[in-house]
Length: 460
Image 1 (cartoon, rainbow, N blue to C red):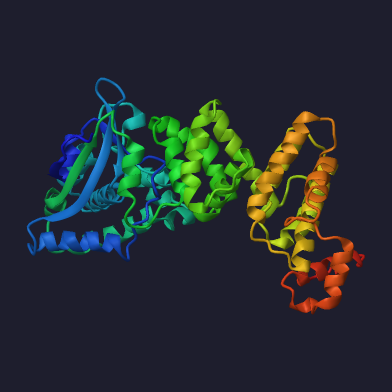
Image 2: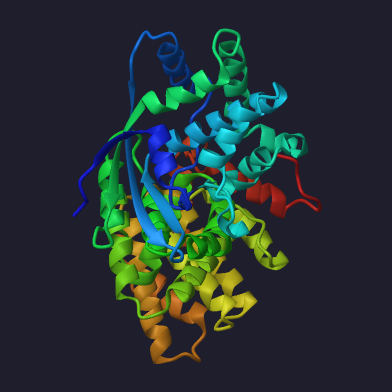
């Protein structure tokens, strides 16, 4: 159970944690406040406090968990409220910069000693705030007064954009108020602080408090589930080594969610509905006997396969040529099946020639069914079943060629059934009867005919 919440203010909360470091865990969302909306409101509230239009302002809730690093120092992981806390620290940075420019040593010294630094401690926790990994370098450069060293890309991020905006607003405030008066507004910015105990389930609390507002994707929840219960150092290591590459392969969270859906299907032979992906992942993750690192490495390599199949280029040149044709189908339906075929190739269980042949056969299967107008509604759930059959046959006789196994399961066993592969005769008959140009799939077919008959690639 959560301990009793404490009604306090930003200033007192930060000062009460002297010797501690506030950590924004890697499982949190990126710092998203920007000068046009949330940060503007934050500064508008500061201005109202300065002008005595309001006596205090409730900034919001802050939920945190304490971990002892040593007998003297603690790590404070922010479970909720990172946007508010990070913005408060950026406010302090901008205020300190102005104090130094104005040679107000009283204000700048107070900000350093009570808010920004842990004095007389190890370098690792010298800064009171450790932001998200993606924001860490920018924040550190600003704290140490090295803002001029920021790259153009770093200046485009929200940390610097907000810093610049807050600096300008404080400069305006300083024409009417002293810097200490501006600093003291943080003592009237009220928060409700909820400390968690070791027995609290931080992941469940995180899911609960993020059930309102912008919904988390399954990929967001999976990232949190994998990373949350470790120390910040281990979280950061696992994020850099294993999660960040996933974001490189699938930069969009929805695309990453899509990958996880097919990854689970490749592992369990069952394609879940989108709403069940997170729950399905937890069940799969918790039944695995492998170490956490092995499981994360496995996810990483399957995501690389997914990238090679649907985005490319593939590392293998011969395979890339085959995949280039396959991508014209724009179909994710066979993803679970192909992911496992790529794993077998990677583990040298099948040859490059076999994998290319598998991709061509799946490509032909999809194209033929589209040309004759077969219903594709159930194919997404068929491919995991096909994978199960192929893998079972392969386990019984590993020396048997994978293409022979696939042909038996995909073509022979499906004759006369809903998932049958259309024959050449059916294909000819269908194309004689319909206006081919009305078929949605006709363009890639014609492009292939054109390419096959050309000595050089045709610019389409």
